[in-house]
Structure formats: structure tokens, C-alpha cells
Image (cartoon, rainbow, N blue to C red; front, side, top):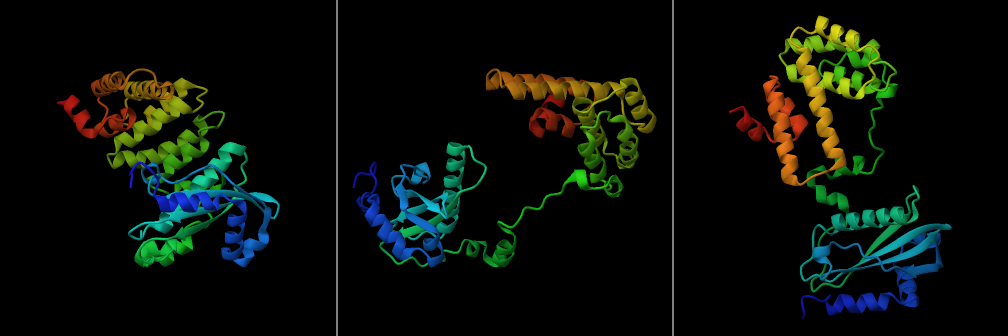
Length: 307
């Protein structure tokens, strides 16, 4: 067999299943009753799209059919599996392909409503398929936990709905949460006093990098009506913070963000720019973790510059 061509088995089934009458009979016979009743089979139409991974496209074929479910656009996705060895990860692959179908639909329609996609597998391998087709069985001992959580409503912590008093109770997370919550305020100074009380505790723990990263973010992204008052408030509350270091870090962070945003220059040029930024930050006495975070240089690369 020519390895550059789809297998004759998959080519044959794919060719036959593009005939509407064949496909309709197949689906009417094999779909669960609840699914079949929701479909308007006169709307069944084969599509040209394929969602199989590029490296598998010469080994596996798939077919997509557009169809109406209760009058709404949807799809039937059929994977033609003719493998010499059954694939235990087949349910996982089917999940990826189904997501790809949904993504393709969203791009084509610009709609935010997800289409219903019903996936099926037509298996004709040389050996009976011996693995489970239940996606959650792939999680082994944690399958019950996965089944209970996977595709359930996502956990979302909405900081806009969390009282400031609650956020202040966190030792490490509190300052970051308060800043993230109030960064869009017309003036960041009112919340700064509260945040500085939390940063004082962190300063006592010796985590100075936390202070500089937080303060430089405020400078870059927050609205500061009175900059002199801001600097004075910081200096009067944090003994280890140097005004020059704060401003230097903010400037460098902003410059790095600009470079990333416009994506100008070669990779070599970008790397050189990051190195120059790191050197400037080192000269101001900023820590390795902060420099690595801002420049995206690896820790070992920053250590070389320090040496």
C-alpha cells in the first residue's frame, strides 16, 4: 500500500458514507432514540471538513455532517477507525475532534452559541475493540472524581463580589487580590494604604520581590492621581523599598510588554533586548526572580549575567 495515500478501507467507507441515503440509513439505525428524534434528517448534509490530526490523516478518516437538532444547527461527527491495533486513548481523541468541530463552527458563523455535536465511531479493525469507550475510564482510580468535576460548571472566583475585608484575611494572596480587584479604580491611592499593611507583613518575611512586582504593576496599570503622594506613602510604610528600584522596574516592565505586544525584530534581537533589560535591572539591585519574571529569561541565564 502506498503510505502517502489513505488506506483503501477508509477511502471506501468514506466514499460510500458521503452518499446521503447511505448516511441517513446508517444514522437512523445507530443513533440513540433520543438523538434521532431531535434530528431533521432532511437537513443531513456531508461537509468537507476533517478534524483528524495531520500526522494521523493518512491512517484515519473522518466525516462531518451538518444537521438540524430541533431546528437548530448541529453536527454528526463520524470517525472511521480501521486500526490494526485498538487505541485505548480513542475516547480522548474523540473529545479533541468534537471540540475542533465546535471551534470550526464558531469561526465560520461568528456565533457564540455552541452547536450540538454527536460523535460516533465506525470501527472495522482486524481485532475486536477491547477497550472502554467511556472517556472517564481513562482517568483510572480518579475516574469518579473526574466524572463529578469534568464539564461541570467551572469554578470562578469573582473578585468584584468578594468583600475587601475577606481578601485582607489572606496573608500571601490578600495584597495581590486587592490590587487586582481595584486596579481599574479612578485612583489607586485609597486602596494602597490597605494593601501596604499587608505588604508590611510580607516584607518581614523577607520576600522583597513580591513588593517590587506588586508596586511596579500598580505604577504601570493603575491610575495614580498624585504620584508624589504615592511614592511618599510607599516609602513611609515599607522600609526595604527603594524609590529608584520601583521606577526602574516599572519602566523596564513596560518596555518589555511593549516589545512583546508589537512583536518587532528577530528572535536574536529580542533576546539581546531582554539581556540588556536584565543587566539594567541587575545594576539597580533587583532580585533574580523578579528579573526572570519580567524578561522571561531563564534563571540560569540571569545567573550568568550576575556572574
